[in-house]
Every structure is written in C-alpha cells, then in structure tokens.
Length: 255
Image (cartoon, rainbow, N blue to C red; front, side):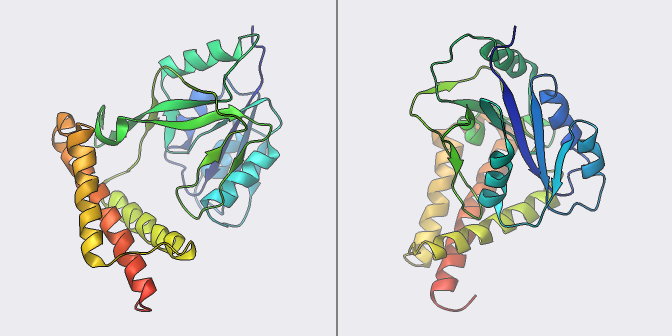
C-alpha cells in the first residue's frame, strides 16, 4: 500500500512526438502531474491534458526558473522532476512504487541512473555511467535559477540511488542533436559570462574539449558503447569547446 505521495513535474515545448512515453511511465505512480508548457504549437498540451488537469501555459524564463515554477505548484511529500524526452523503465517504476510504500524513507533525495537512448541504442557507459538527482522531498528543496544545466538543491544530504534506468531519448535525429548542442553551448556561454567565469583563452577551450572527450570515451568507458559512444563523446567535447569559445567572445565584445 502506498504510504507516501508523489508529485511529478515536467516542462514542455513542442514535445508531442515523445511526451506521452514519459507520461505513461509515471502515470500510475503519481498522485499529481504538473506540466508547465511554454507555448507549444503541436499536440503537446492536448496530450498532457489526457493525463492531468494541471497543465499551465506560460512564458519561457529559462530552465531553472521554469522548473522552480513547476515545483512551486507541487503539493505532495515527494517530487519527481522528469523531462519530456525521458521515461522510467519498468525496473525503476517498480523500485519507485516499492519506495513510496515504505512507512519511513530515511533519505532526502535519490539519484536515478541514466540510460541515454540514442540512434536505436541504450548506452551503458560514457554519459550514461552516472546517476542524476531527480527524486526528492518537496519541503525545503529548490532549483538553482540557471538558464541551463540547473540543479536541484534538496533539503538534506542523505542520498540514495533508485534501481533501474531513467531512459533519456536525447535526440530525435542527428540534426536535432546538432541544434540542441548549439543551443546548450550558447546558453552555457551566457550563464558563465553572467557569473563572471573566465574563459582563460581559446587554447583552454581546446583543452576543455579534449578533457571532455577523454573523460567520456576513456575514463567512463564510452568506447564500450561502440560507434555511438564515439559520436556522443565527440558531441559533448564539441559542446564544451563551443561554450568556452562563446564565453571568450563575450568577454572580448565580439559576440
């Protein structure tokens, strides 16, 4: 029997081709689902309304602020923050159901192992060789207000890891991957510039990109994911390079 309540929060824009997969994976676990949509022109809103009455159409203030808005609307004891391009696999659904049935949950938050699923393959290494904090007690928790790569700050320091995978269908196709990488790099440049972080020059941008590739492909064993693992390591290296080049250009008023 379920003894703890769960709010699921997500933000959307033009995710009509994949948001239902996300919603289906959490619909039987959630006591409430809260969706903040920033002006979709496809079927996203109507699909979400099939799963929840809590769909709100808003402006776009940036990732951190938008997710905080969604969190502010949550009312349950626990919150799961999930993206429209993600879904809980069956093992993680069962693990979350079991967790919510406990009389006492000692942890303040849980990390969910990532399963990046791209070009027909679920990766086990590289960027997937980590877990992301997405499940947390609502009281006292908040999001950082960063434009991109926002983080959850839980109310306490006791973390657990949930079994299963948080599947992440990151790219629709290669062009979408390129567009997304470009957007994230430029948002990262602006974020660092706002926070007065220094680029340390273009050679440092090259070093950061080289380190990123080595970290993902070698240290996190992305090479074991085959050719897709190589593509992903190169993609993240390029994003890091572009981010620091953008920062350097902003510093020198050349953007």
